[in-house]
Length: 337
Ligand SMILES: Nc1nc2c(c(=O)[nH]1)N[C@H]1C(S)=C(S)[C@@H](COP(=O)(O)O)O[C@H]1N2
Ligand SMILES: [Mo]
Image (cartoon, rainbow, N blue to C red):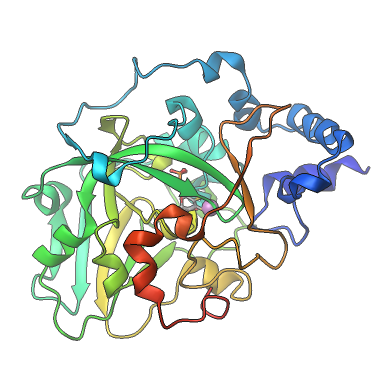
């Protein structure tokens, strides 16, 4: 009947060629659409989204968080003081297509991935190529906590307290050559552990791939996260190591990295490969450049309630323009989206 396409719209916003209802602008949100949204929350099997609205989770405190405690230095100069999303929200509403396209799938299924031991292959235009045990890659660096905004291209956002190391420090220690103009990353490809990679319906040509221009990668904001709320990352957030690039749409922040390659040419990246007219290589957060199927002027700051969708204005470069705008000063960002 009429219900199903709407539910699918909500559940697969990056895939379905119709504007999702939550991408409606504020002026379009009538009481009826609030009602329909509510119906979708209740009707769907999307337990996680429904759970986000439950008062019990909204009240969750920082205590009792699973994972190994990390030692780190707080970095207020690199942190927002906006209200952090509660741990249960950050860990139950995820995009990690390796485990399925439902926002709740990663929390449900990512435990099938074993993250210890973990090895990262370093390749291409650098002096220190080779296979590194994760500990060896991280050993020389002190962990930091950075509280960043994460803005998904699907027009929702969260404030997340990451623990990790500056990407620039790790890359510098690998001694890139002068030919290194880009750095490329790959996620683990292991269909035995990642049920989404076994799916016949998958649109992604595995492994998940991402990349940055070298100057973007060396920017002080680019971060390799290994933790969340002071503890090691849960698998659904990209354990044991994932990228965080806070001024770009979330899909650039690739999870569970097993390969780092320094390249002379711009690498092909997953969402650009799927739909180049919708998802570009640069993917800078930009309210002035709409997605072809929805507006990027606003975002839902999660967790949001059924009757308080919590729409806020999206800020160019996700509010990090002071640190990164100079990287794009000669570029037409509507062309290089
Ligand atoms: N390997 C991999 N990395 C990924 C994704 C993915 O599907 N696979 N999804 C991306 C998207 S679209 C977003 S918004 C963020 C979500 O990160 P989070 O689940 O930790 O909030 O991860 C990004 N990294
Ligand atoms: Mo995303």
